[in-house]
Length: 230
Length: 193
Image (cartoon, rainbow over all chains, first blue to last red):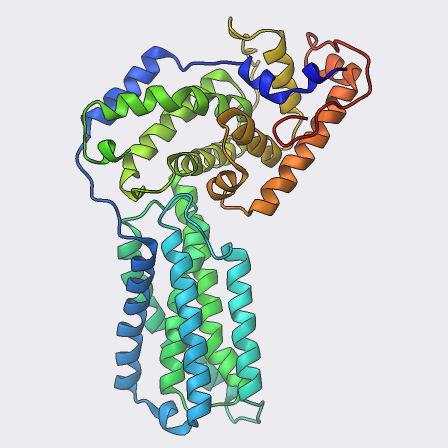
């Protein structure tokens, strides 16, 4: 076997293929028939900022309507840590969500890496700040918080999906999971302003779980949409 | 591409004639038949047409186009798999080799066919389209490291296939004959084996 046999470049060059002319002409005809000027989407960074704005603009007023009880109970240091961590998490997931709208966009990480990493980081931060305490009616309280968080998340997800529809959504399950996660984080953010229960177990099951449930539900919706599209 | 976004009537024909041969080759090496590859090519163009507003001036066109082609291929693969699990097989009509494809093309096609899906796709983008590793990573929503690893494994696999001509000859391509008996793998640069 010599060098010539192993040269892939040469082999590629030797396998030229042209599309069928009638089919190519048909394709061009279909494209030209609906050819209209289009305005390119804003940059992924601008869209990420818009997503974050949606989340804050919808979640913060909801928290203030329900009562910002957590704000007055948290120390300044804890407040800064909690809200800064949630702001970073929201920004990261908004950037990942905006990248889903553009084919071949640069991504911070794939959703399968980003989502668990963000959740883990938040768990560690919350575990460093809060401790587990005995709590009366633990599951009922957790469910009440989770339900309120999911309601806020549903509104954010709806608003985000209106913007997402403008993009090129190629991977629907991933986009669904990211949308649900992002909206769920907005719900967590709302609860972290509203709920004064700082029992770690409650924060994880009642607040942070909203983001995880959101991601799961979003993935399910995305997968069903992908099945329908096929 | 900018003219295409501005609805220049000549832009679709120019783009189609410029990129279709490469895209067809990409699908040809990643699809079952020529007919299927042609269908996927048309589906890709129609998708590109619908998504043209998501290309941003200054961005590279090839990764953008191949990211769409990558997903069209994946969707088609899943669709075919789903249908295959429901439908009873009928006698398949073999795809006749095109008049242009000679001995080398046939042997190379059969060699590439021995690669796993992901490796085949990466090697096609690198070798057929001439994309850089970074561009392939963008098109496949992967990392540069993962693309390099897939390409490396594909080269290794192809080396094995070329190094075992009897296997290729009996299973895949009767026309593929080794031209010399040297065991040296030849060049080892990124561009060629």
